[in-house]
Image 1: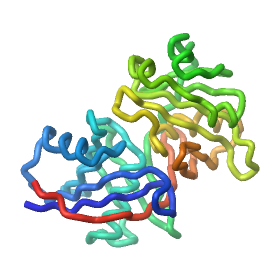
Image 2 (image 1 turned 45 degrees about the vertical axis):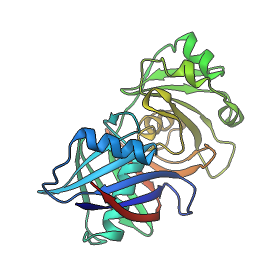
Image 3 (image 1 turned 90 degrees about the horizontal axis):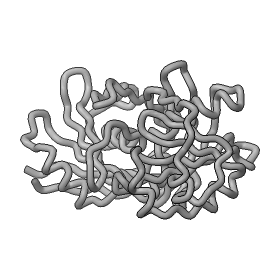
Image 4 (image 1 turned 180 degrees about the vertical axis):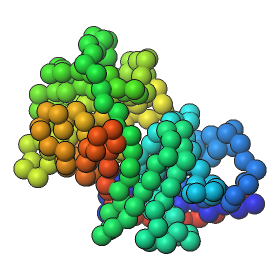
Length: 265
């Protein structure tokens, strides 16, 4: 049975920038399992492939990297919502409701932007292992640990952009990934970041929504503001609006479909 498959660039309004995600829209009751989904994700070879299945009160949503299933992914959720509004029967005024391993996540659209309602993932102050900092090749101003990731603040945007990690060494760390961040030197951006997750099969993720569930509370506390503009300064790059709402985070971004096709089971 063929399934519609889309590749969507997320957290960007321009094709071939932002973070690409594959979105596979499956019919209710589709007879597929984790092994098949993992094989599709490996075939797509993107940082995440999202699988969406209709159910009561919304959709089931699962995310796979080329090597493993993950519990939370922002850009592939944004891509999935975009695909449902642009290519399927979900009306533009309807909320997209996703039942996931991280609970109920929702998405709304307005004025060309999609806003995701995600859990906040604040980090606690923690001393990063010397081996981690050595693998990153950076000097830390502050370090912390969230549910999934390490957060490393460095002195400047130039230090974030100039980081050249040793991915083989980073792949041995006991965390999903590591966020490197600093205040932005641009007047219209609050902070910048990069995200590395070689243990998950992603050396550097172009734009990472879930990392901003950590970065939002962190920079909100440091800068004394709840609404922030973030720039993930990977080679592709992407811009996010981040609003801290207590124990939730509103992540807003744009998306564009790059291609669509048919996946044969």
